[in-house]
Image 1 (cartoon, rainbow, N blue to C red):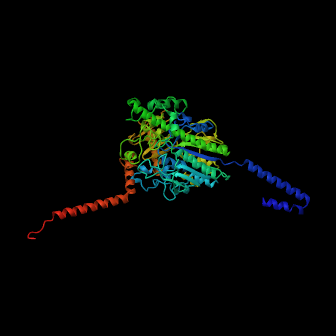
Image 2 (cartoon, one colour):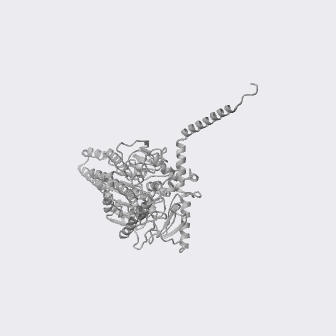
Image 3 (cartoon, helix red, strand yellow):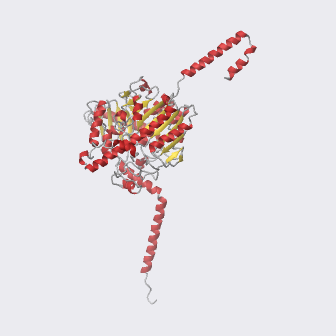
Length: 607
């Protein structure tokens, strides 16, 4: 601009023909600049929504009973992925989602609550994002994006572990596996309280807190603060819905009264049939069986059935409430005219949560020390501890086998929706995809190009060519793709999968399935196709070596490790109090012994 001004100021001193020539050149240059400005691609705003513990078919767009009108509308104007897989545990999934790297390369190979002593401090098991890791927020920030996060982090809360040290301009996050949805309160004894942080500093929640509402409110405040900015934004909303404790406002719960009265056996069957109608599974696929030892619906009394049905009503209400508040965010983007240029990605971190409050050390603490109840009256409200338990989780995961924590399809097969500018409308894609594919996809859609020198840190593949129709697949027919979390493992190759699950719902033995014909993992082909089984097992061992997967200690049990780690945390947290108590006990014993001895001393003869 300055050069053009100087040229115009000197025109009067030049001959007319030169004057005209310069004017023409300037006009051509200005026209070229304008044309370049008009054709230059506009970087999209990006909203990444992570639901906690939602099954493949929980959302209405996939056939679920909960009303998720906001997400369903996005799905109808976007693309649904039907063969998407994630890690079976929340923290590894979140690390993979944000980095595009296998969880063992990020430092979050498992969750802190279940980390065995043998893995503490080992590479890949630090329980925070390690220095070499680059998040999608950092990558987008380098492209000029403003970056924000609200919700569940669960990737470390030590110095330089929180979102403000990993590329986020603003953040208000919970660094725990979960927490109460009504107040700042821990939901399990592993945590003393609910550790919320704003921009890296410990923070308190407002009096009117409800998790889904607050997560959206806080994001709206960040977006509102930056309305004057012309830069695109990346907004990551990691909801607590529908992780336990399952809680929801009464007005959302009431909508589902009696909806689940037909029970979990019927829900399993109906989702299996619906999955066939929607093309989510092969038309001849068998229904995955209920895990051994679980109750049938008909074995319950009428009162028990009402209690259990209400649990699922609260679960649906919590998902509905999350969707409602997400709708408020979309309304804001529409009002500010940002919606048309906003890309939405919606997914879940793993399958449905099977945990329930059976008698035991951890659960007794929940009920007796933390003030929770599991009564039918007030279920879902403040003070209640809601959960769906393994029977409902198995039904929710249908047509797949098992649920969260396990590498069977019920633990790792999840919904994935893309919607927004450049995304094909009303399209279902059955391309195999993985949670590590999300970050490179976002980066490419934002106009970024991955540095080849960093590709060893990004194990995922961009799905942008699939979305555009350039490619039909991102992983070759004979290309193995592995997963592991706390010993529960899987490896995919084309139509086949090997999987290993430990107790209490697995036996630790590898199995082989044709996952296309048998997505319910009902027919183990290990003995019928031994050569293929050995080939996939060898490929898994290569995955182990390549990613630094460490073996689980002999006799490892997720439940036992959780109890052990929780006890150690409680003892460490209360060491000063216990020390004082211990010294007091020792002092009392010493005084008691001295008194006892003094009474036994007899006067000498003749005195």
